[in-house]
Image (cartoon, rainbow, N blue to C red; front, side, top):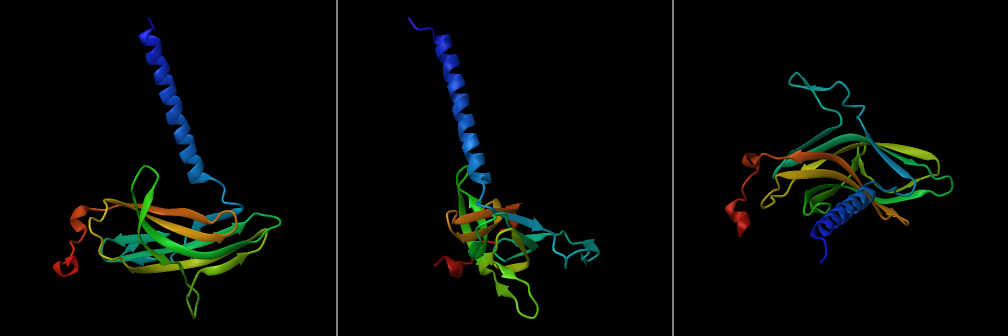
Length: 193
């Protein structure tokens, strides 16, 4: 007759090993090297020391009002550490996402990254970063958030770069938000129909 206690301990050990393996895989998927491209989010030089109603503005600055507006003001530094290959960025978007499963995220809406450049702002797209070089962009993006039924209690603001090459997409977290459900607007009756 098999020993129940040894089977139980064996099951516990295999369960812990499985959970550890899944954790390592999720960590690797989240932090894997994206070729040789390094993305850094740094404070915006134009926001340094800025105040609104006597309070200093957080830098970088991210704000979301569900159903109304969002803003994201920061500096984006892209560094190509490759010695031989340039990196081509096809497009860059900012996404608001919500968690679906432990690691999956569903996009609620997305908008192209807007580079602040006087006199004309432009959308960040079709950019080449030469080997062993870096580029810095001042990002000032914002816009209206569509009315989303059952706006999530937690959302996440993410920069997503679409690349040409073996790594086709890189996500970079800007900030996690926790929303007060009392402040999330209801859908107007005319939009329900």
